[in-house]
Image (tube, rainbow, N blue to C red; front, top):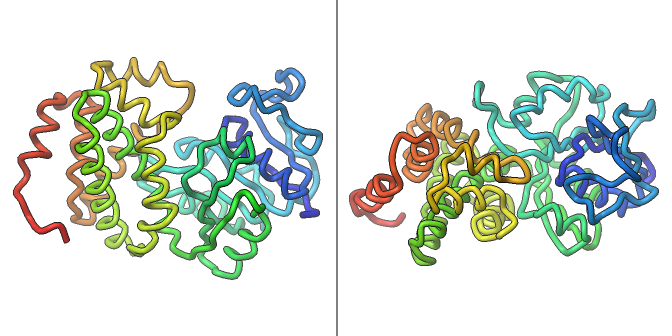
Length: 320
């Protein structure tokens, strides 16, 4: 890659993406709100991975034209940084979630705030620390236009980080958002000592309700069986480094949502996504019993025994 790459967001994911982009041969400008206070280019969320010379941390973007911009800002704050994007430049949104007040996915937020910027979204089973370390991984890059999705996938792929092109922006974004909610429930299951059998059942039925909602929104079931669906769901529901899983573990062990959130090293999107996902499902007449239970549990409306009883006492039916 010859054109420079901008990365917006100095957290763990933004830092990992900047390190990855440098491996494509690009000069990378990593925007962090307080970059001028960072000692020797060390990023606080990934201090074990110092930035190489090809990555320049900055608090003001340089006056150069990038090949693309990778946006790694939490979904709830995405709109605040979109004015920084150069007009007409491909923006690859690397955030997962649903805007709580509007029920908008990241690409919808971009279209609303910056209709002059073509967008794509990158999602998949990727822990930031492993991407930073250059370990093998894969993800999906979705854009409304297949040619652009393929071009961006080729631009940003390396032998150790494979990107697969897709045009199912709805399915990719929903899978990426909803898996965080199921991951909280997975953590609760293990934290409360309910067992591995229960977790396996929960993950499977969680995927079923995510797929139902994706189809109702115009997405494709096959997408939810891929990297942005099942792949991301499995990683987030079982990986010890998953913040949403860690949150659920703490909740299952009796910690309050507020206390558990304050104990985490970063953002757990599942908290803000749960109620938004629930509202989205209700507006489309889709049943999401796991999402409903975990949303009510995190908001203190029901206890863990009540949530467990609610799920286990549902009427028996055919699996498909």
